[in-house]
Image (tube, rainbow, N blue to C red):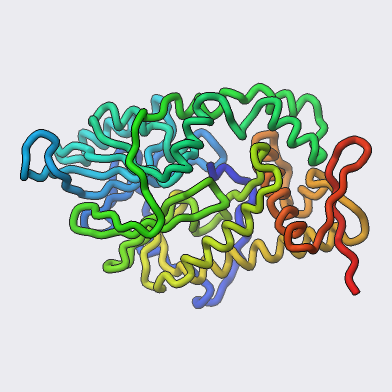
Length: 373
């Protein structure tokens, strides 16, 4: 999920060509209400109990073959992402049901990826409306593992991974050890069946045809949706307007290169036209996808340069390098994401040959710049 501590700093004054455009200005829909952002597409905004205190959800007018009447289409809605499962979110959805749905049913629930703020309430919505879940296979299977307790969010394997990168504060690691139930607390159940979303496949929702665009690095197989005819992009967590998406290495895949995968994914989205309305999961809808992608690439390039410089004079572990990437104090929850992100940057530098890694006598990985010349 995107509960990350590394909001991208924005200069106080920027020339117009370096600014994103926000067509709805400062407007934010209140919980339980919806704002129409394009014909038949409604923006919902629901709270989260994190530092990142909201998620944007999308409600799209749809029609599908009637389940019991041959040759008849049923009018209704497709939901894109759900919010976490807690009483506040359920109450907000019940308000939406009474105030927004216009008496029409939810026909399907689509999840961009498996993180709790996107998938948590899918089981409840699917059961309530007898609606199928649509998501990519990797995300669905990862959610099943996490819901069953095989999780990247806590437990002994996660503690051992953090220890191997220099986090050795016993009282803080005890908190991580206790978090085996962190994911199931927000995603208590996964629907037993799903419909697969695949990269490049068309998806008709109502009168619009969307193309599924896969993204990697933030989650296993994130799916965004692009309507090229009307230049609309439901970006999930891949393209956020004011914070950089958390890109972490996890205990389950300790030598992964998610930052490179994320940057490669952004490159495949860089041809979105400037007038594309981006509908992000966090922050306000905006235009200027290519500019935002350039900003994100520059942001990560700067962080990589800073890390490489820090590792030039001496070998460092990832925990020691957190102040290089994050300029303010971090609590335990934030540190889990920050350390995963630090390792992601270090792994990229190591795998492209700029850093070399060794393990010291205490079993901690240390990184040092390779000699040049």
